[in-house]
Image (cartoon, rainbow, N blue to C red):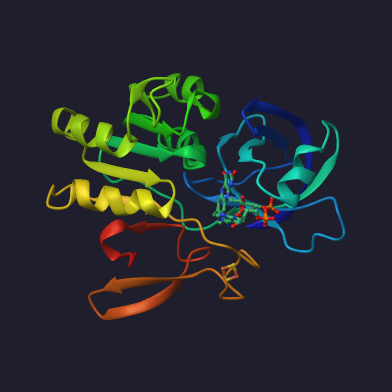
Length: 254
Ligand SMILES: Cc1cc2nc3c(=O)[nH]c(=O)nc-3n(C[C@H](O)[C@H](O)[C@H](O)COP(=O)(O)OP(=O)(O)OC[C@H]3O[C@@H](n4cnc5c(N)ncnc54)[C@H](O)[C@@H]3O)c2cc1C
Ligand code: FES
């Protein structure tokens, strides 16, 4: 992990309130899927860095992509950054996800979908099937990007305005009976993990989740990002930024 000066190559809106940024580095080290980066905002009043998953990366061109929703002051500042500007970026952070099996089901809920493309890029030769869910058509992102990399992509919207109508968890659960994936990786809001737990309980398929938590340092020093886990030796707390963000769903106390 290194703190680097990156050059913004592109920063454009791609959906309702959602932006895509590409940043270029002088060098880029090995990146695992579901790792994240921490951006220092170009505004001295915003002291804390903002974490975003590495949505995708290109080792040859030494670039990384971030797909982000503008939700508060920090992301508003980020959306104002122009191509050519420099940013201070710490990466890669977190443990990442390295699939053991060959056929992997990816499930993304809302901005959690941003975790998925890099997982595919980092694991060539494996068969990925992506299921991505959004509130409505205006919020759909990364369908094309995942379509170029995965064996299949299925989109669901809560209101049925695009793709299948309903929760992506239900759509993915039905598909799993046919696909029979070796493993599942999910990224989305906590409520989705509860639904996934119900859906896949007893299925025998290992389910991994990439957690999001409010963060301070992003590197394991401040303990702001603690989450509770249950392991063979009992319950305890782990740091999402350093010990995660990827955990076995069975271990996470929701
Ligand atoms: C490991 C990690 C990866 C992430 N990846 C992405 C990503 O790829 N794309 C993306 O859009 N967002 C991602 N997030 C969330 C992103 O960091 C926050 O949305 C951002 O920091 C908000 O900054 P702000 O100053 O605009 O908002 P603030 O003014 O700080 O907060 C505005 C709203 O955003 C919520 N929020 C703030 N931080 C978080 C957080 N860490 N997790 C969940 N909700 C938060 C607040 O509760 C509040 O409702 C990620 C977070 C983590 C921890
Ligand atoms: S954010 Fe500081 S320990 Fe995780």
